Image 1 (cartoon, rainbow, N blue to C red):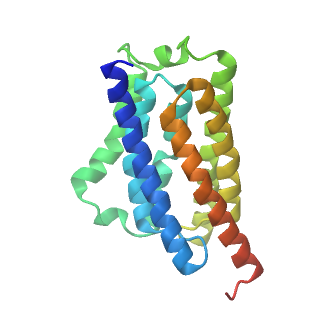
Image 2: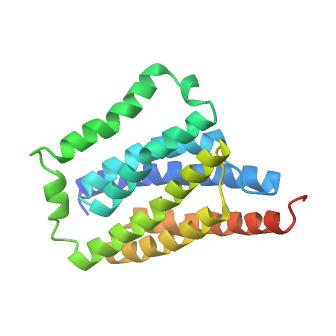
Image 3: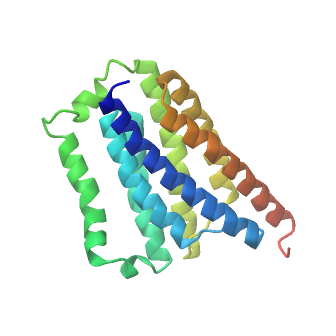
Length: 213
């Protein structure tokens, strides 16, 4: 493994540490409340992790990762809006958060090394694996589309049981993908996340059976 590979994996693991931290914080607050809840810090960490993971996807020339982050990025921001915390974030960071995806997409469609053509043409990933990984990422990130629609209807940031079910399905698909890709960042991130998803589903089902608890 070369120094450049180590640097790329460092970016990916940093993103996964932020994602792991968001789940631990969310899990802690949910256990305390006895039901799945959506703390503000979950979305703050999601946004930071999403930026780094998007960069990691470009560096790895991994279309599945890039696609997944493009789908959910602005949902993270919208949840901070719903919790009335987005405007409390410093203006420079808000502008940077809006500019990152715009600049990233501009880079992807440019002729620079690592652009979208390079990512889609990455011969290290067989077509069937690209399709499997992309479908897995779409399923995994669709949970946030579900969460967004549910939250908009309730006018508050919430997690439904369906969110955790879809999380587990998508996570399993990405876990399989990570094995074939020999990607430790994806593997350990999804393996750890599956535990938190399962526990939140248990809490959600328990709350549904005993709403007064």
